[in-house]
Image (cartoon, rainbow, N blue to C red; front, side, top):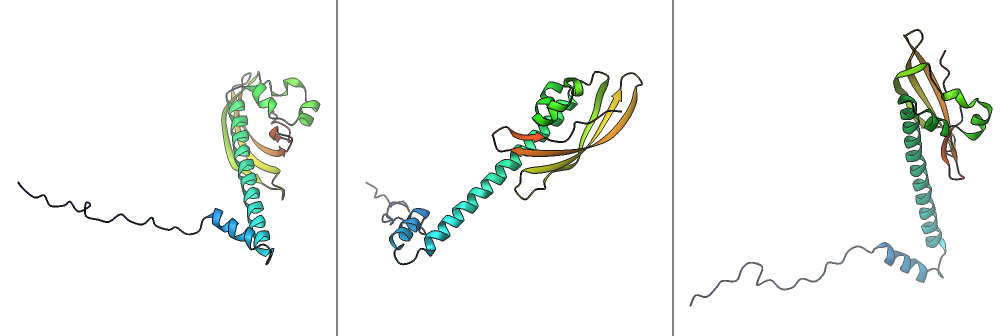
Length: 171
């Protein structure tokens, strides 16, 4: 009978689990138990948590702005004017005729974002975007171009980003 030599991993002793650096749970537990000594560590944790929440809110607003401006541009480009109309702020919609975006005699041939949406207000609730729009009037078949300065505002009530500037006029 042959004796078998142990494989390299067979003769190793079981390893002790590696201890990792203290996690958030241990840190919080340590802070709470030592709170009687000084409230400063607890205040530091609350400050870090609140700044993290602010960053998440800003990131969510930025992503929503990008999605809204992209969807609005696509709605105009592909002729979904009712969809584009819904991105207008209700105040703007109330003073415009309902067919303002019913571009029956216009066909968009290009929609290029010249300056992507840029948050301009300190509270991150307003943004501006510049767009170059190429179009053809069907009666003249002449290609024209215009620059649209869009001002967007974030509505905290839950409706997201709304266009607060007038929609483009096609001369």
